[in-house]
Length: 390
Image 1 (cartoon, rainbow, N blue to C red):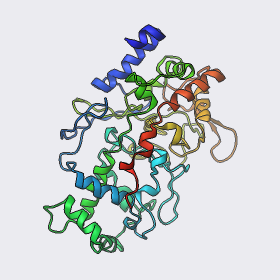
Image 2: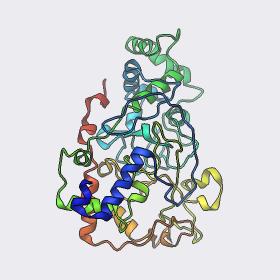
Image 3: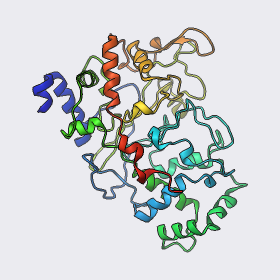
Image 4: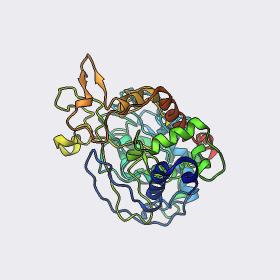
């Protein structure tokens, strides 16, 4: 194996294991939270630039016409109740479809309690939010920002539902786009079709051409610092690979041929506000859905693809830089000395066993950050197929 000859057996073994996750779905839950298994449709889709073939809902097959409509709707502010905000308002292409804010802001100005997640490779995600294990399909997840009332995001409600649809029915361009995307429907402008089209577009948002991907394909080289960072990332010292070891650099993936889909959630010791493991309401992770004390503060590990452009970090955007993220993990959790969130996350009783103190030198942190920088896919961030068509 290439890495075996250059960088030693330990790194090569770990690296081979990470590739096995992509090929065979061999990754475990990694600890730190419960797992669930979901069955999904098996609509055939080809493999993408070395990635396994993704799963697409059999009830919503992809067509070029549906993708085109979904792209228009993704960038359309008229899809919000007050006509001011689009999906793209919280998902900017140049930021890998995050928004650069600590916390997202809805169409009415209400602040969301959580950080907007990126949409790169969302077709491969097993669950689709920070901590809701039930939202496994884009079509269902999209109902939350469109119709949710706490917090208000797109702000579509009973009072304006008909008005929002009429905006598209009365627009000749959209009338033609809907008709082309759903030719069998006598009245194609509907919320079901809006959701289907946007979901189809989002499934095309594939990021697979970073410097790291090019390195794997022997189309580019990593410098010495990036290589050292890769060895740390894939090795037992930094142990990043336990939660970010798949081809998508997370631990919740699904793709065609995978017999079991694991959905682990992790408490990383970010808070311990009462000395008993408490996290600030309403951001208490999986606990919000299970009421199990052991699920307090358990969140999904996000993909690290394009991570250099997706800050601020964590579910609540409370860590601003990658350097601070590494300091947090190296300390084995976060200690907050004063204020309403005061507490020692390092001693959180529900913290994952994977989160322990790591003795990283300043140079090793620099190397890790430089490796994470190789996960940025510049072509993805600028791909005209994903840009605003208006």
